[in-house]
Amino acid sequence: MTREVRIVDPAETLQDAARTMADIDAGFLPVGENDKLVGIITDRDIAIRAIGTGRTADAKIRDVMSQQVRYCFEDDEVGDVLYNMADQQIRRLPVVDRNKRLVGVISITDLAVNGETERSGQTLGEIARPTAQHSQAI
Image (cartoon, rainbow, N blue to C red):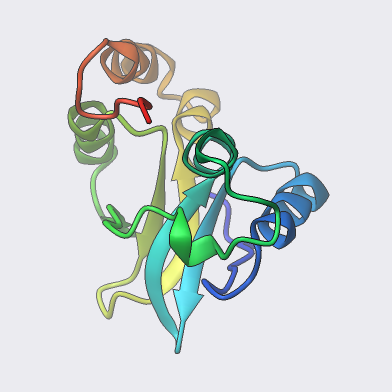
């Protein structure tokens, strides 16, 4: 898990989000407001939901972020986290404590390089399967 997580504000621009992603070499940022996790923005959100629909770099993060935040708890079992990633077809999850305070982000890569290679590979296969659940159609 990555514990040092940059959080962006929904009032920031897409250009701000893209610059932050470039600075930290990430394609995923938690969005927070008033000390609460309110969304997620990814590089794909910027490319497809924003640029693909004609929005400009000065559009607000809140206009294209995913508001439905899926997360896991820091004390969840690895198998449960992998199952949820596969079921929801997501590669990264915010990690929260039992008070729902953000403590980090975990990715399928984090799990694969830390001893869960086989199960991570199976999970990635499930994540990559074609479905309408995460259609990028605009």
